[in-house]
Length: 367
Image (tube, rainbow, N blue to C red; front, side):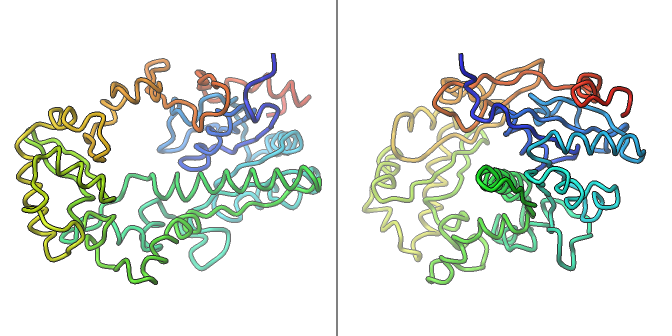
């Protein structure tokens, strides 16, 4: 029976890191790629040994400060179709593992580099995290309530949206080109570039007069009554996304709010009063009660669940969107392809596959 994984046969070497690079490796491993992680002799300060981003991968511990360790890394780069690294610019070059020598030895290699600031620019060598990358792109300033500091939206927007997804797109694009040319490429995936790309819609809306820089004054930043969260009787929250007129009418109907007393949906002069009216209505029932009221409707109203509750939501449960693997909650493989792809269940301990990988490379005893 043919392997149902679309990336079966793809070989990737990933230099251990945190955040967007290992998550990109996980998604590629989920789809069948053989991902070998080069782990350090000592795990980093915030690295997690049993994080889902290690699932489906193999691990080899290499001391890259030694000549023997670097020699094994070179052999892995010759074996691989793709190399993923997330170090600061210049680190791999100082180790002798930069794109020039490795791609000379393996011309079809896709050398994928994941950073926050990019390989060039005045801040390229500075440390940073998701919140910092969002702050310079304008994305962070656009989020949250107008009367308090912008809240960091976890690290979903920068690390995983602007980082991992653009890294994967670069990798797959370069692989597609290498298939016909035999030549690999260097992928410079910077989180700031990815987030700036995702901000394109808002730059466009601004140019058309449909968006302002003032936080909480627009139709997707909780500046309107039909796209925001409301508190419920039990202190929980309900999410409202009734943008289109027919969905908005359905919401008002299920709430028991007469349209004539509510007023026009897009009249900005009425929005403050409409918000107050909806706040009062939503406060009359618990979150669970509102979930029942809106179940099966097109009103675009949903309960705001915790990540622990999400696995038991009927829709999530029907899709087996979340499951438990060895005591750790795991998301399902995404995207879903034509055939069901089984969830990888192995998360290797550091160095668990060292001997097997060395034997594969013909480099026994060299790490």
